[in-house]
Length: 510
Image 1 (cartoon, rainbow, N blue to C red):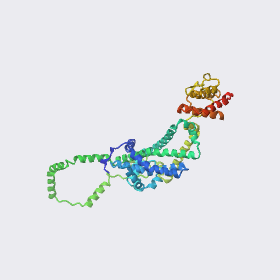
Image 2: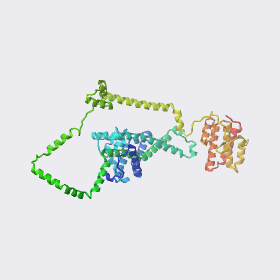
Image 3: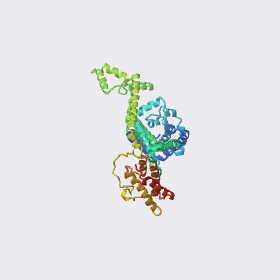
Image 4: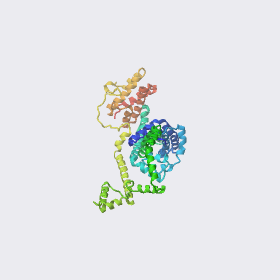
């Protein structure tokens, strides 16, 4: 590893600045990272969906659990690209089976739920450490950037869920309006059978596509945190400075040595003459090493201290005072601090941690259940209907005049006369008449913000099958003519007029 060949500036950074660097690294190689991730993950996702076709939740859960195996490929690409050895997509995919050999089971079992997964993954994959060596290495790395790595995972989970629901919402918004009339979120949520399976697998496909975009960025941010921590620990920036200085002085170093030798030659001649004049005692290499070792074991080079219990800042001062004979800790405080390291206290602390997490999960579930009606308004695009609200009766809807004074007395006969020459006006007259009757005869709270689909929903709450069937047919023909410029057939024109007379000319009201 030659630091001088690095494609990024090697210097200490804050954790959040290091993660920004990871985003830039992922953006620079985005096509390579996304293509390689898609090649290795999407075929397996398709296979899992086929195997667990009747259990879509199981398929997406297994796919999510295998993410650490897929993450090894982006880490390999980024580590190579850092030093100017960027592989191609073909070369990277060929290396993926080899990358799965080291510590795969442990990364998929007891290390799977680690919140620092992307930060510590280079220790196993790039450094090849395992066992005690890995634990010691992690103990050093996690001292500073461990909190940022955990926040990265938590924020990444929130971003995954947000993008997932955003993709599904975007798909729903792109549905044509004619199809949307009979297909809303409530009906989708209540779907069953093969239709429900298709919807769940489509939702899983959105999640797999989201990971193609987000997961390489997550791995890049963890890798940049790892590089930043090693830069601080191993002083990579200082090493680069000394290397540049050495390169600059390489050309003039022989001349400097020659000048220094000429200047120090008289001193060396005098010291050699003094050495010849006085006898010297030879010193063996072993004795010199022992003497140096003895000096390094004493202060100020080494001050060993063993602490086997928790110690607070005030206690450190008390220990110094005790060494001077100024004070002593109370016995009860020493006993309490000693008990903190007992195994029973550790088990109690773990039990309390589990209890607190359980209380938090229960509280969230209780809040969701308590405010389920309020949350349901955010699940459906159309808010809950309220038929009892007193609203002023509008005179126009969808740009159509719906006042009773603007309509003829016999709407069906007037529409029948307009069909041969002015079919658009005839169908518009029937639709205006329907809206006017809904406002004045049935007292439906229609507003200018309502859509055709919402009008049909309000009619459905009247529980009049004949009126609902006629409204559905009339609305469908009205939309086909208004948006698609398609006229209804002749038999449909006659049927609409007959249905109008049977519903309204006979005085049918609420």
